[in-house]
Amino acid sequence: MVTKTEETQLNRLESQVDNGGGGAWEYLCMVRKLKVRRSVKVLKHGLLILNDSKKRSSLGPEEWTLYEQVAVAAMDCQSLEVAKDCANALQKKFPESKRVGRLEAMLLEAKGSWGEAEKAYSSLLEDNPFDQVVHKRRVALAKAQGNLTGAIDLLNKYLETFMADHDAWRELAEIYISLQMYKQAAFCYEELILSQPTVPLYHLAYADVLYTLGGIENLLTAKKYYSSTIDLTGGKNTRALFGICLCTSAIAQLSKGRNKEDKDSPDLQSLATAALEREYKQRASDKLSVFTSGFKSLKVSS
Amino acid sequence: MGGGGGELRYEISQNAYIKLVLHSLKHKTSAVNGVFVGSSCDDVVQIIDSVPLFHNHLGLLPPLEISLIMIEEYYSARGLGIVGYFHANERSDDVELGSVAKNIGDHIYRYFPQAAILLLDNKKLEALPKGKDRLPVLQLYTRDASKNWKLAGSDGGCQLTTKEPAANAVLLDYISSKKWEDVVDFDDHLDDITKDWLNPGLFE
Image 1: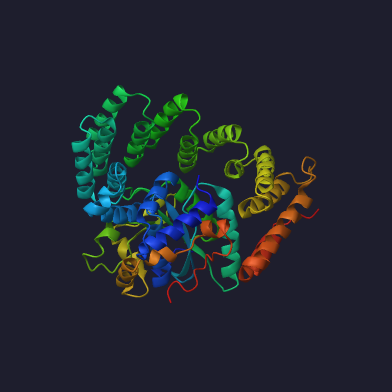
Image 2: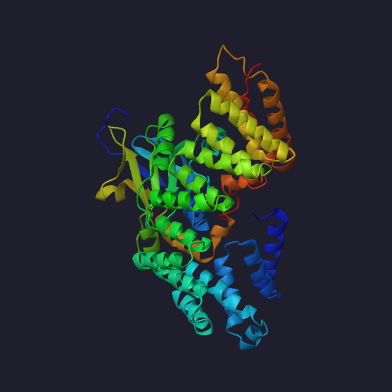
């Protein structure tokens, strides 16, 4: 995951490069390190270096890393000719390489030759069943064809081997959410919370899924996870504060008359509302009245 | 809505239309959604404005509820309400109206029975620079008597029109000047409440 500081740094560097201030190579390295998707910029600035033989050779062996990076970015931008040129350069330099083989398979995928790409990935996996990138490409291939159940099957199989891959769990959760399979999505977030208990994002996503599922039990649990999100972020998470308001109001509606389990609600509710009110007053005062009038009606009378 | 014979028409303002198409262009690789705001009079639903909603986890309820509460609150004070739902699929070749979109449409329908779902038509959007199509690059879905969302027929084009006839030309202009970079949605707002989902100044 990319932190806020890293993102600011990256954006600053990006605008510097965009405005001709230099630092293109540093920028490209940072994009690789953070694994962010800035294909248009990578293609533009990477190609400028590759087309300048002096700049290119000054990179030393890193030159080949750049060829690979630009190839992938070019595929993402549908600049297939550029991608092909890069892949050919790499192929010439490393004729036996599996990594270049992977790139060529991706090129088939970018062209939309699904069948051929699938074949190429399968044969790469026969040689090396533990190539995580290829496994993930196959998931992407299924997704690109709109075959979401296929993508789910592949991801589940992948996760049997690579259980600690958080990104894969997240991807699986997101596909489940898009198919409205909320119970399965909740399971993914439980896995993520178990393996990384201090990441607020997972607590928040879990709470959101439980709230969507509905029912008194899920709402009570959702509220706990909104609370832990607030705890883990030092009270700074707007979504979780709103989540508390929604939960409390939904719980109150569902348990009218037999409101025993949820005694702390009024307090928590007014704390969350007050925190949001303060935030809006200080940082977005033009939305304060919309917020207060909208969420006043949600308030539960204690 | 007692019969009346005449078919419902939807007239969308240029800004409401362009704002949401730009929103989908800002997040090309994910599904995005939004709502249309307006009012109805006789057999015409007038779409005056729009609010871009989300580009992540469209299927989750809490962010949606938060946004609808605040949007309702803001526009009802101005005599307007939510009259439609906008959706753009994740894959550009996906022309189906998915279940998440239908469910959100159902929700809006409960409060506004003439509600429409407008699905972005990527094929038409891509063809815009080549043609002189004046119709919005959106597919119109309305709810039929059996409560299913149905694509308006081949003549459906006339059921949905833009208020300003040159809206597509303006849209192309904004696309070429990368106007989409400036669109703020409710996801952005919830991550940083100083980001304004009303997008003031976007068209100035």
